[in-house]
Length: 371
Image (cartoon, rainbow, N blue to C red; front, side):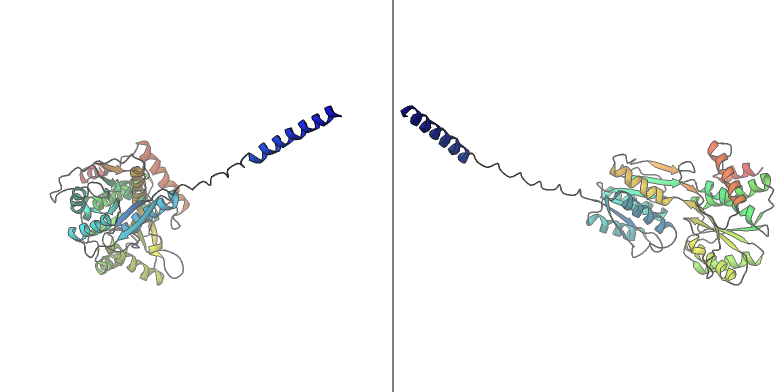
């Protein structure tokens, strides 16, 4: 009995020790809650508009659409545009300064009118990146000034003009074509030289007999009534397709074409810079826009924003976007072109890409091409 009682006491004491130890073991600490990482700060991309508004169906709108597409695709930028109070270099510089002062460190400027303004701003704001579309920085003497925070982007407008010329020669019913330019500056000239070459190519190789009976420069990019007057004179001569490379002057060309189309007249306009099909729409839902000789300013804005954000920005360089870069061309959809015309234009495009055709981009090259 004494042994059994001693054994029982030992067991009770051992059990008490086990229970006591168990009671003293602290409960595991709760897992720490993870604080979500803050969203990366968005890059602020600003734009200053050239002549006209952001919805001008031309240079401003095309550039802005490139910025908006980048935002939609990447969701890494915060965007804003400013419309200057005027069109002098000081007006552009003031708008740029306003953007910089509010933290915008990539600024896109569309058009040659920004050349001296960006040249000044690039020096003042060395930590700001500039994408200058269709222009290069200079002091007013047209001698290029290199800035490591600026890329200057140009285009082979003559290649787009060439394709538009072929499409026009294949589409005209009267055999008479017209050209209305704005200011006689290199980009507009290249559109015109390419257009002439495209018409000549179609006449020589595709059996057309088209003639450019009027080839005029109005002298500005904003005189809408003058554009309508010039277009009326051409249509009255029997021209049925006018290629405009004239900005706001081209709005007047469209106005005249649409008024005539509303009355049943078969006249067309070749748009410029962006797809201007919508600019030519009339009340029945059709459009007087035959096609458009496009400069992919949206691609330029998109690509060089991306280059800056990803550390590949070609600062200080002058870059020319070509047909091979998808920098120029005709729209993907051309409701007023026949399937046969589209096929022939595409065949010519492939000959340019292969090097079989070299589109003239100067008056001298055009003269040689036409021989």
